[in-house]
Image (cartoon, rainbow, N blue to C red; front, side):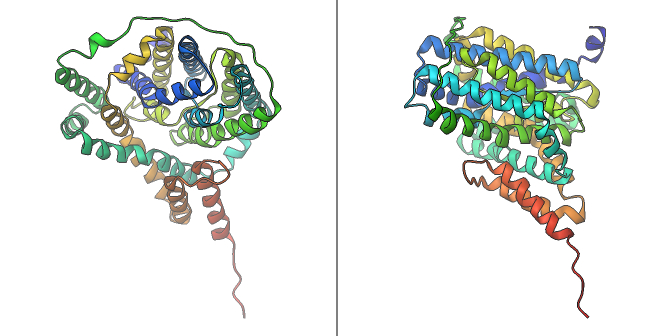
Length: 393
């Protein structure tokens, strides 16, 4: 406890809060769509939010504390999008069975050590290029948002540039404060009065098994979570210098999915976007003290889960333009550092560039996300580039 107090910093606490804010506000609507597609009523949707908040809170807090690293978990956003378009023809109990099945596959992947072994084969420049490709669209979102709300985003960007020069450790905090202050001032305080004060409750539903749903939805849910969430999540940790055992982390996310699936916790995984916010220099100069951001995120996720229904309106009061700009600004340093690491070595530069471009393109074959294909194409370039050709004669 004393060490935690000594390692505490405002910048790390803010990084954890910003991670939760962005994690919820940017994709909670997709979770609602997935729950509705599964046939959930209003009380069951609240149970989903509570289960997801508690699951992410517990895994963030205890894994960060145990490994002294900023371990940030999240729900599977692409998994939620998949469920929103795939669950219409099965019962809610069968949907729960799908969630449990995908969690079992994740747990087995972690326990077997297969995922960790595969990720160790990926060279750091390729991993950094893939991560830069995943985060790149968030950098672009700053200026997409500026086209819609030039004054709000302009103030946030100007605040970042000034505070980055004067108080770099607290740049993101000042950006957040500036954005919230501008939004509240523009609304004349009416946004705050719209926040509900409900807590809600958990709804347990026993899983039922539908073989077609398990194969047709469960396996794709497992694949998209692995390729689009866990692979970039591991890349974040590796690019930031953390050698946290991946197999153990994957196992815990799978176990959490199994336990909380009957309550609506459809899929937990390692985070990429929010993890990048908590593991960069903006969080803290000392990498050994950034785990505080993981503890902070865990507490805020737990509070968000406890709030239940209130979290919906709490996170919806912030305009999409503010959330997009905040995410992009918070990730600028991480994007730049990963691009630098990816392109620094002449021998790997072309392979890293291919990885970056494939990932940015969003190409998807067989339902597998572009992050996977970026690594695969980059690895192929490395292999071909390292083949020695003997000159004839």
